[in-house]
Image 1 (cartoon, rainbow, N blue to C red):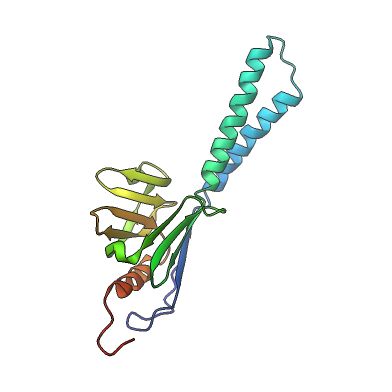
Image 2: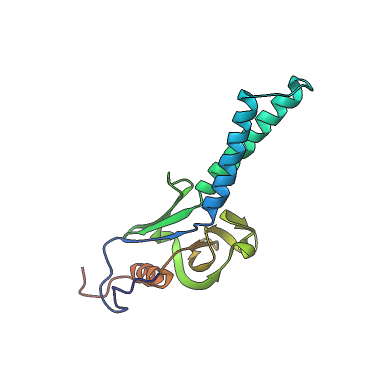
Length: 180
């Protein structure tokens, strides 16, 4: 889905917002919930006769795996990006964690990436690779690549990434003479 409500030469909004969603991760969250439910079911209605240690290990294992998968996937179901005059803020998931705030003064440039894939980053989520930098990948598709002044890069999968890049580049330029 693309929003071309602003022309390339027209004024940009005071605050630009965008997001990307991965609906497939809801299926993984259901798997996590199923593991959690299995652990609870084992704890409540146990018919194990082989001792308490295997039962405790099974219950704890199912609950731990369920919580890990459930919260791990829900944290990266979507990403939201907010760009204002001072910074770019990235928030993941429903509670906004993990979160990263990058002052625009730390950004050397922004580029459009037409094909960002979880495969190239090692999966979904908040990723770091020494040769590529840091990324928030919630789905495959278009994204933003920020080049920071310290030499690092930060990649974000986001819908309407071209518009975001234009807004960021425009805010990185010093104002023209005669403009406030």
